[in-house]
Length: 176
Image 1 (cartoon, rainbow, N blue to C red):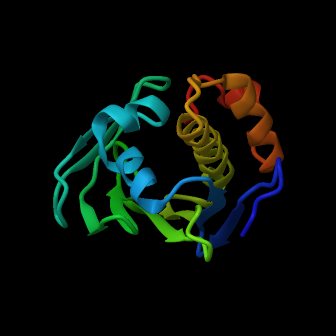
Image 2 (cartoon, rainbow, N blue to C red):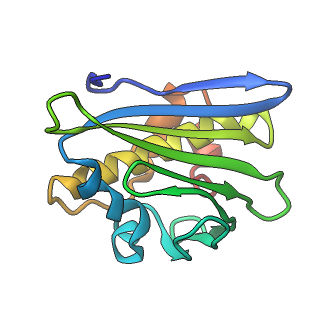
């Protein structure tokens, strides 16, 4: 599952809806990564402001500063430190599903990290979500390495192009 530098995730389309899948091998244990997915102070450093009720059925809301958008949902799986899954709804968009899976590597020195975002509202949104998640996971990796990192629209636009999305000039102001 090791990821070569610059390797992209996958975007698939089924029945007019998109799914995104990104994999990373992280140099931390699942127990070290879990707070970066569930602790509001940690999540704010790489993703967005978080409101969470850490239980199945609990609230999981993200407020993105860089786009002034909010995703609202509920936890559908909460299995520390291996699986976190929640519904995702932005505005009137159809509800989708975000899932993080963390598996200790065979040597227990790291984690195979899998993110899937399924049932996105339309096939055209796949590249935008893939680029957004890719950029945010880069920030999560920087956080794990003890480095401060900020959202970078130029990086997002490069990723968007790499995922086959629209011209970044058109999406840069509203993209995740």
